[in-house]
Length: 90
Image (cartoon, rainbow, N blue to C red):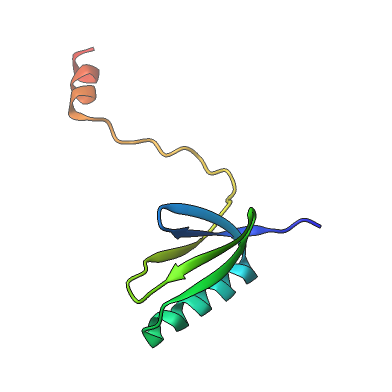
């Protein structure tokens, strides 16, 4: 069985890949713990197994979505003044 790891959880300088469902469960439990002013070990099921992450009112974490897009045309940066001078002088 394959899982679609579509979320990244950033916590304590580490990065965990998780499914949307598992990241939503972790995030809801963590936010609930923080709002109550409690301290708990909150489980996170991720691609490498299970982690018990310490959540306190001072804990900082982020959940981001992995986005894979279609190839877009390259973005060409505007010429710098030095490059513009070379074009004029050349």
